[in-house]
Length: 317
Image (cartoon, rainbow, N blue to C red; front, side):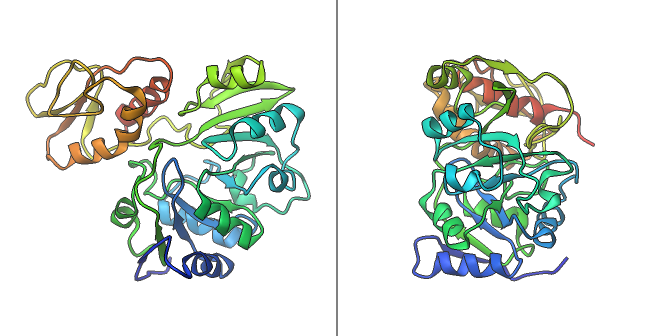
């Protein structure tokens, strides 16, 4: 693939949005800020451009991508929006909820985006910058996290540059992301809801908004992004549910487990989610063989934190 002198430009600088759109129209990649993590964006209707995402990240071809749209009306051009899906969009968009729906056959979405599936994952990001880019482009952007595949997701422009420098022409710096972990992914099938990836919007939040239960994922095949067994991994090995440091380890604390550094000294789960990837990156810089992580309650957004930690600790290829 081509090598670039990667530019980092403030997303608030005059002309930044136009520059991003110009690169996307030319079939190039741009890293964009969202409220969750930074995304590596390509024109979702340009298959050659989307293939550059997979090449830049080293992403397995069977792992589909999320399409980012401005709103429900744009989503309806590309997926079949059911009444239940429309209620989800009304309650949570723009925001960190991705919805997997049947793809419209005539939508023109690049085949590489869906990795052979007949569904498409769509979301409207809670980032004025990125929604303005999509609106100016007037079509969706395919945008997984802007990092080498399997590694820690980026929550700052500096994280993107560290992982992907030379692999894309432009990074828009919108500051540190607010949520800090990837979006919740929900599948809508036969007017039932299935949790495909946990995130900051919990099943209880979704049930409260829709009156519908959220069922567990009912098979082990890949039906959405973020389902690989090994993912979100630092360089060091990861040991979970640790209450004390062992030889050759750095300990990440939570709540009453102080640790060398902490996800949240007060035991706040939202703060822990916000700090998760940044804290794992910081722990990696200590150069220990293993990062031990204190127990995190498996409730609320803690379910999503533990999902990411379990994938970080999984055996690696």
